[in-house]
Figure 1 (cartoon, rainbow, N blue to C red):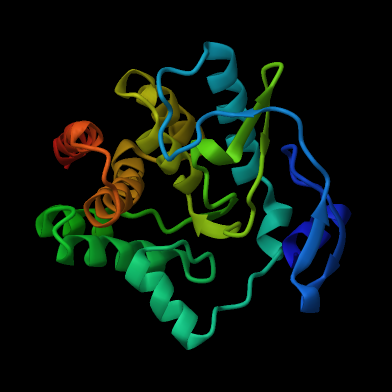
Figure 2 (figure 1 turned 45 degrees about the vertical axis):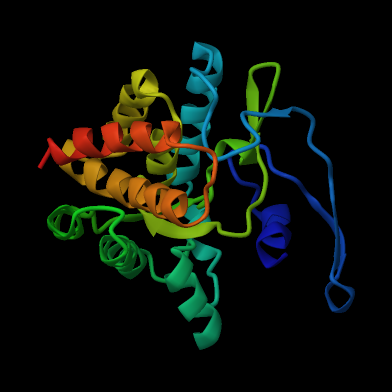
Amino acid sequence: LALLDAFARAPPPVAAPRLVAAAVAAGVAVLTRLDGEALSRGRFVAGPLSPRTLAALLDRVAALARWREGLSLATAPPPPTEAAAVRERLLEDPTAPGRWCADTLARAAEAGAIPAGLAAWATEALPSAVDFAHGDLLPRNVLVCDGEVALVDWECAGAFTRGWDLAQLWAALPASQRPAAEEAAGALGLTARGFAAVALVALARERFYRMRFASDGDARMAALDEALAALAARR
């Protein structure tokens, strides 16, 4: 709510819901409704995005990363018990970008989602720069209307290691469209090695969730295995 309230004074460079009113004690908030269809109802896109949609999405994600005003919208650290739950489930934490990425890699390796050696390499290769990011850029949080994109579900937004939004998108896209996300990361100043490290954080979380919570077969895990092998080859 604080973030959406701040958006009224400093609008982000992407379409987002506006906060109309809120009653915190009652647990009620009223937001404007955005038109459009979600890219997907899940964590991955069903097939390649149209070139127009992909270009529009990458353009808005890059604009958000370059939005320096967003970094002034500080997020208070979660209470200790909530912080522990965040670490346990590998949920986003914009209050400690670098440490959160490193903790995620270590936790995923401990759970067997990624090789420990690969996690150690990525931890060393993580970029030190941070940008403002949506934080939870899953396809279900991206709305498309007439080729334009809007983002919803901003509860995780804040400062993240540079390239985080693009890394989540990279993990959700089919392999044929991942180079577009990598090119966008390069335009933000990330090296191929640096982006591969951030992408491994996103991929580690997907494999962790798939191992812990998914029950829809092995096809998605096979695709994640392929993506993991591609990242491992870049060390």
